[in-house]
Image (cartoon, rainbow, N blue to C red; front, side, top):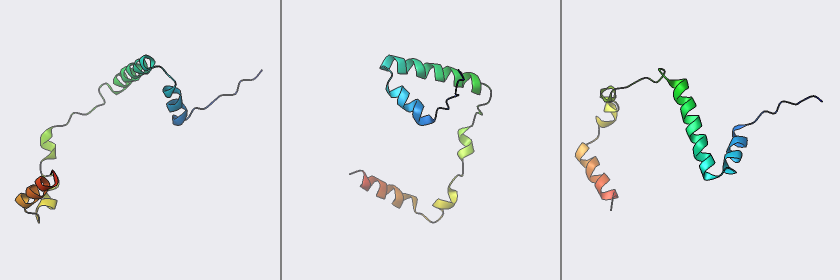
Length: 77
């Protein structure tokens, strides 16, 4: 008897996960996490916070910073 290869889609996996018990879901997360760490080892680039310096500076050129802060504080109430 010939076997037909079944192709699962992302949604199929999600539905399968929903049927797992909570402890089985945690085990699956641990397994996936371990595999990703192994796969990404050495591939993840490290960034420094200083790389963000100046980002969006052009947006603030025409804006009064104190006015912006005051408006944000008003929205908290």
